[in-house]
Image (cartoon, rainbow, N blue to C red):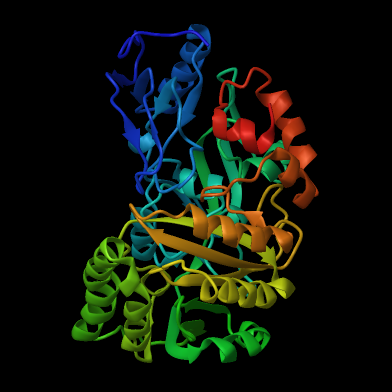
Length: 448
């Protein structure tokens, strides 16, 4: 690849002298040749064309919530924060079109003011719309799928600087793939998402033994629109959460209860005990036993984003695998046996969620009913031994790694678990034959 002087641009769209970019977790860094913050789609197109002329690769980066190097580049780093906000609302069609740099938190709040909501969402809303959909961000749902599966249209800048509009009717083969494109097909400029009139969810959180949760998993899944649970390693304890639609009215947690659960236990105290556990690993099992008993049952009702999402300020590194739903209980029991029989010290709960099958080419739920298992380690704590052992279990069950979370899989493995893998890579060959949007991560997971 060619080189360019930092800050050298000569075109519209602020280019600045770059420093070292780091992701939210701090486990990925990159030093781009230049950083561009376009204020219009035209400026973004020009940035892509200029990068190609200069022999530089191009990557767009949102808020850095991916744990992989999907957005890392030594070329031109595009920051789309100025391309933000709702462009249009079509109430008849039940859609909203938003600029790609819009942060999910801002989108959720803006939709609520319009009396609208996404059907489902993940538990963190600090990501940009483009970053979240491009890596497959999801929540949990029996019938409602990931953010990518809720896309009804999109526009992206391709390697030749064109703006390509895609939907089920317009460039449908690109639409099927670019809803979750890992940044390999182009740079998203806008996304059209399905929305519906705002509704209420009633959440029921309840501690439950691991053996009971796993024995009754299929029952909990079938009886609830949104079911998830957290298992606390080194214990036999879990915390379950069941979200279902209700007539309302809103009955949010009381101020004291919300502060204790969401701020003290989930952030402030959790931060302190993780820091202590990192310094003195031997105390982690004891802390886990205390923490798993600290949470109590509670029920509350609110609009969707206030129920689905929670503040997450304790930084961590995460691996998540999507398994065939019928294999998840067996995998979880193997994971628990592995942790119990090892000298690992794991201070973060293991999260389990579900998703229906969808038709997105490289979605982790593409073509199959799915359950997700996510393992975490506190930032700065060695995680390789735990993640390697967990990954061995997940891959034995045909697992698909989350595109934005730590994993070691390569194109050969991924081609075996994604029936439409060759369809995606063939489309990439057509749209980006010179790999303008390539980087080391994409070379590993998609091939050269």
